[in-house]
Picture 1 (cartoon, rainbow, N blue to C red):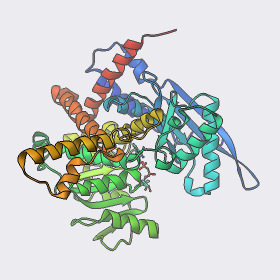
Picture 2 (picture 1 turned 180 degrees about the horizontal axis):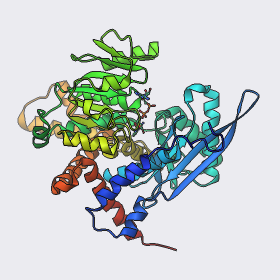
Picture 3 (picture 1 turned 45 degrees about the vertical axis):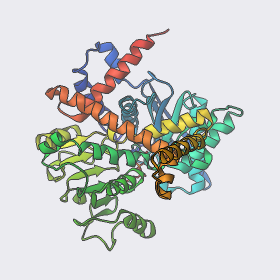
Picture 4 (picture 1 turned 90 degrees about the vertical axis):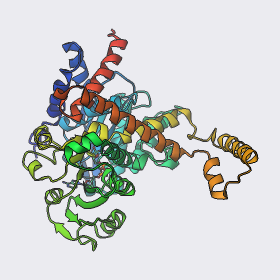
Length: 478
Ligand code: NAD
């Protein structure tokens, strides 16, 4: 590797692809070129390097934080821990965050972070040092804070890393009342929110359920409506993939294939997602799972097996011109960010398929992060103030109806009607509402003009219009 320019050989076109999508969609809006340029550009790109102690010496770590758009504050986006991460990728992911937040009406600008390491090569102590030092570097440059820029988990990071970030930020900002709102995706015990861990996957499952509920669209792709019995292949059994598979099977679909780093497994009669997950946890691989009828050494071979719906939930650039024609699915639901190249998307649509785009499909995570941030700013769990009040009101109502009608409810019926909402129920209901409304908003735009062509373009048209209104209202100063 070239130490002075470690990304020299790893330039990608991810940000270019996002901008191409933007430029196409922009034709269907009425904004002037300067405003469109402002929306599309990455406002701040901070690239930095810092040392950690490794053995008897130092190791230098490459890192980024990109704030794509400040039309809303704070900016928001996950931190990716990956040895593949580079500036182009972080810029692309930050831009997608801006559009994603606009699509689901979450009042944040987009941001993203990257730390160029393979977490598997570091001890827990070293990962903690890296995470805390990364946070300190952001604090030094004013790139983090509950009203400035709020990180979250992404590929390779989770609740543990978010705890270290929260603790570092709070320690460096003693007395700041809202300090824990500087990062989301925290564990519940550290003022995280119920339902955040599974939110992205739950959102993906709701997005797919919504898509297959529209008869007109299903007729076009040659599928029946409803999730019941639909065959689904999922790539990636991490946070997004595991929970997408779990909720899709709870909604009645059959998970027939799971593709991971080490290979893929397939069973046309369905796989038990939880059992596969536990098998991987104990053996380190999905391969060797007794319930599989076929195994493949290559993750890509698994994605090409017969199914109705494919959920790529690992990394970008997985479906390209090389393999798109071999994919049997009629619907691709993008759990990951950027899994389908623009050329592959065009071919997939030409062949009669439909793609539920990343910037909508995986927006469940940022939606519930927004709820967590609100919880942190209000310093009270959702439901705490009104749950008992609701239960008492419901009870009075039930007693009154029973008295008037002379009909008594069973204890189970009574408990179900009377019960007030828990934090988890409120979060899930807010998430479901957001995903359902946003899908139909995007679909309306998609149907409004055949030239828009894809749900991705439609989502982008909607996002551009909302962001443009914010910039126009803000004006320019100084
Ligand atoms: P994760 O680290 O929890 O899981 C990723 C999984 O993908 C791992 O199990 C890994 O082994 C697997 N994987 C890696 N390379 C693979 C390959 N070539 N083939 C098959 N599997 C492979 O990460 P995550 O949080 O689930 O993120 C996955 C994707 O979803 C990323 O694109 C991320 O940006 C996006 N995303 C995540 C969230 C979130 O809340 N975590 C929100 C929105 C979008």
